[in-house]
Length: 127
Image (cartoon, rainbow, N blue to C red):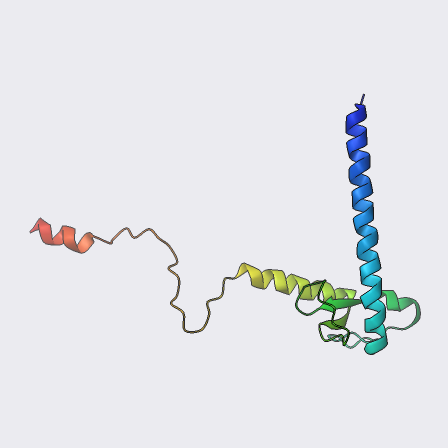
């Protein structure tokens, strides 16, 4: 039988999660409506046109991946269909996995273990 404190903790977490969901939806609705007024209702990647009920499949993508960066001119937004939006975020996550070096910087060593580092000295002492 669950304790009252467990139940109250779950209720409190549920209320917090629900409030966060509502706040996100309210924020998204604000910039989504603005983006739909600024841009044509076409996916910027695949070029599909969205009208009527299909409009819900058109999403606002933040170019810099910062959902709090919503300039009034819409310069950080592009409209993407749900499929292209998922693809864009997958590519972004894949890119983060590769630690690319800056041009002109020295390459990082692949490994730190150097099994033959002192081999030359050992062979010289052997004679």
